[in-house]
Length: 184
Image (cartoon, rainbow, N blue to C red; front, side, top):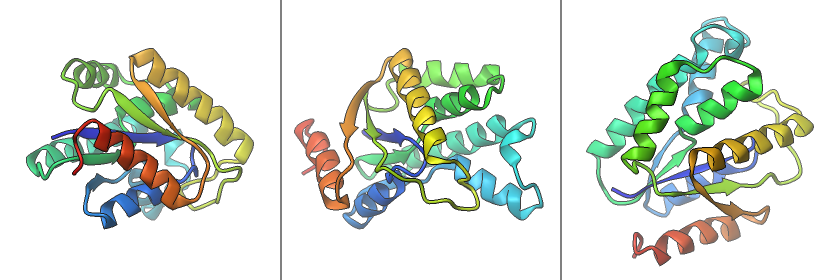
């Protein structure tokens, strides 16, 4: 099961790309951090990313989704973020990353769980605020740089998905994966 990561700044359009890939018939896996934040906010915790154990909850959900995707091996799977993104989030927020996060990153790299190339979705010049996304555009740019550095540090190649209309971005991802022989 070839698996690819879409990563980048908050609000860059990763989820829109993922939605189109899903509509086009590809398996997709949702971002875990957004879902953890939404659940915690529904439980009355307005800023769960500031609470102890946040990275652990995100990593746990990411791992469950990885294993579920592996069991459902319908071909190529596109992931909205990965454990490497969780490490970038910890670094960005100044949190101590849990030790098992490093173990998980070592595992996914050693097992080549994801394709060696991650799709780095560049910002589009703005950030749309949501209940889970309360980041300014300037902070999103800083977060983008942290993501880029961490992915390169871990050993991923980055395929730049530049700001462009959604069909152009989706086509760039599909064409890259198709060149590898993973798409018809």
